[in-house]
Each structure stands twice: as structure tokens, then as C-alpha cells.
Length: 89
Image (cartoon, rainbow, N blue to C red; front, side, top):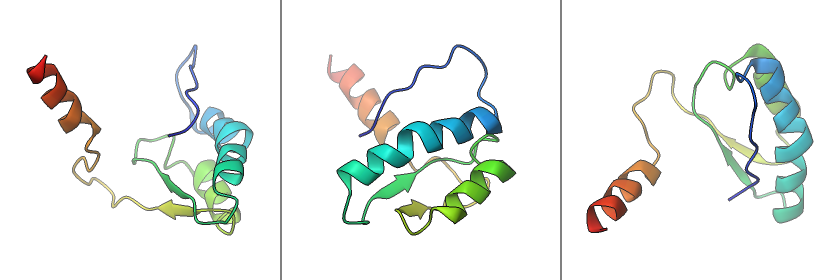
């Protein structure tokens, strides 16, 4: 759940920071105004960049951030669901 943001170029830490501040923060603030919103991301380089990490720490009171362990196996079930749907079709 959340906005779909199409990039015309490679994602960098600075570009990801602008997505966090311009889109994600306002979306979570509206949908989870109670402060119980949960934000999840993986550990790709732009997500783990210093600027993104610092921004997430500064806004930790606005929503919860699910921390992925470094070099962790994929924990997202979407790919499993997609495979099951493709197999069923």
C-alpha cells in the first residue's frame, strides 16, 4: 500500500531521500495519523544511504520503521504470491 513513483533514472540516496520526504512521509501521515504506520524497505544501497538513514532517524516519531538485517534473505512474500498466481494462470 502506498504511492507508486516512477523514476526516469537510477535511484540514488539523494533521490530516495526526496521520495521519502515528498511522498512517503505525507502518505503515512495521512493513512496512519495515529502514528502506528509501519514503513518497510530492503537494504539496497539507496535505502541504506547515510542521508536516508539519517532522515528516517529524524522522523522516527512519525511512523515505525521496520529494520532489515544487513545481507538478509528476501523476506517479502510478494514474489511467492506472484509465482503462485502465475502458476495458477
